[in-house]
Length: 260
Image 1 (cartoon, rainbow, N blue to C red):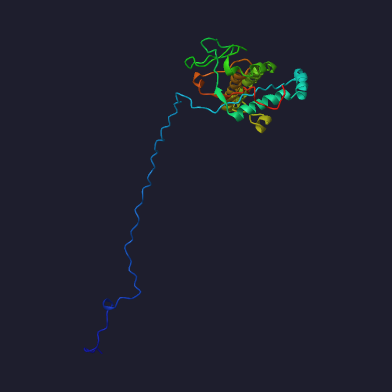
Image 2: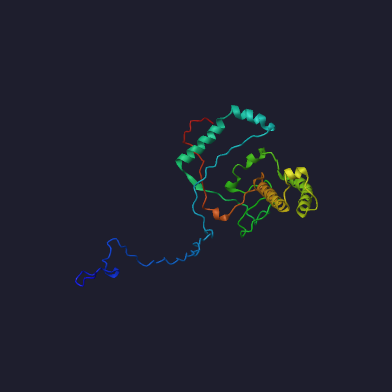
């Protein structure tokens, strides 16, 4: 029975809060961050303009040397093997000038492009007449003629004829290879068993191959015109007064320990 003086039964709303209750905070989803695309900054400007004057260069040591190559120079090789005294003297004089550190200015050529016409197969310089080219075997004067007399022992083995032969044989087989590449690309015929094992180059590959070969051949021809014996040395007047060489003149009182 209900007792009016009894303690009221606590309802759910009057229950004390539980000690293990966990308070939840509202879920806050992080806002999607926009990835900032880095803006490509311009690279710093690099001035590639060559300087008007060439800075001073370390001095050069000029040592004469003759290299005998070929069957016709066998007597010279035998004589040189048993006569090394002159080579020793030249080396000692060069070492003496290097140790004494006595230098002089490099003597530029006397012949410039306005005075001497280019030789056959050579192009004249366009740098305001500064570049000098001489005809075949003609001295230029100054230190550029150092060792010029030793070029007479160089055999005139020109690679130009070999390059012309390679170019001719390559151009002779090129049309057939190009026709094969076009027939296979257009589906005009089926490839043979040999072509299936080793696919022939395509037209694009043949064009790239032809370009590389032609660049190499032209580079070899231009290189030969530079190193060809007697072709002369290109000279820039900006080198005058900048280059230095060790003075190989040994005074009369210097003792090198070698009897002449």
